[in-house]
Image (cartoon, rainbow, N blue to C red):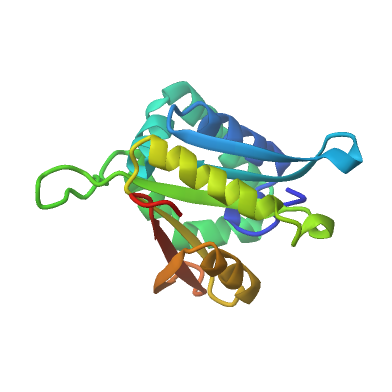
Length: 200
């Protein structure tokens, strides 16, 4: 929460974020990395959360019925305590998320009939006082290495379009902007991609 304050999930509160991270970490496709600040008695300098295969990771999270039920219950409780957020959720996400949970979405196959294995970097955060010292870059490079080893051909991430510092950071590491997309909250995000079949 302190390192990653933006987005709908953090807005749902600490209890929901803990439950969400438990659900994500139970997936066999998850990548969770922590950078340690050795100058602060082993304190957390930053972390990265992602997956080596986004479609398989999503199926694993949604397929764990007990974990999913607890996550949905916590989400419902969090929304009921935040009426404005509940209204925002009902208008923009209730229908597509319900369809996804019920299994109506399917991975897109390539021309050979094999679903592409695309890794996704979901969250990256580094403490403000430690930015620019290489922790974030080390986390991203290790993520790419683990995804490459797991057989992913490419990795993707999304940032807010007006986040120029994040854009410079990822572009310096070899990520390429692919497209801009409108969010359900009427904002804009930029999709980045990097190929993993060569060293990145």
